[in-house]
Length: 150
Image (cartoon, rainbow, N blue to C red; front, side, top):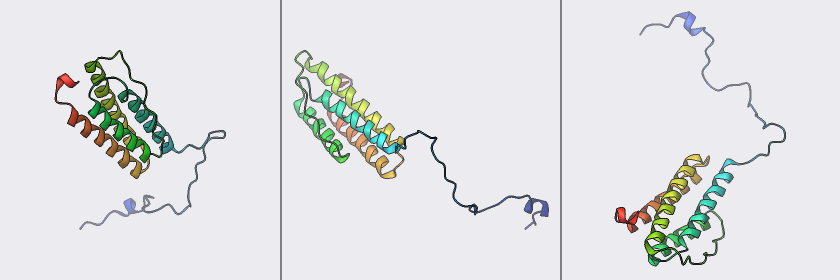
């Protein structure tokens, strides 16, 4: 094994922890301290609540809609939120139009939850949101057979 030149060893490189003490970084004056995960949870709750409102209205596929509503309610409860009251039925939407709206809403919700999982600082929150996105995808896949359902 070749010996390292003395110049390289004495070049001032350090290895290991900095022994000068912890560095404390304070936010600028007047900046409120906000936990970024609080914002992530608020965004997840808003997306789930909006999806819940969309899925709860309109005609058709009541069994499928009921399953999505239960999933939303479970996710909201897991995030510590009260379950919103269902909206009134829309009488102008056709069966096919109403279902396409549900499919679009659920796909958007899945994307939002997955994105928020990536934005979460907490590993536990990231896993929870990723699991919610996966659950949404799984339920959506079980109710969509092909392009006619899009």
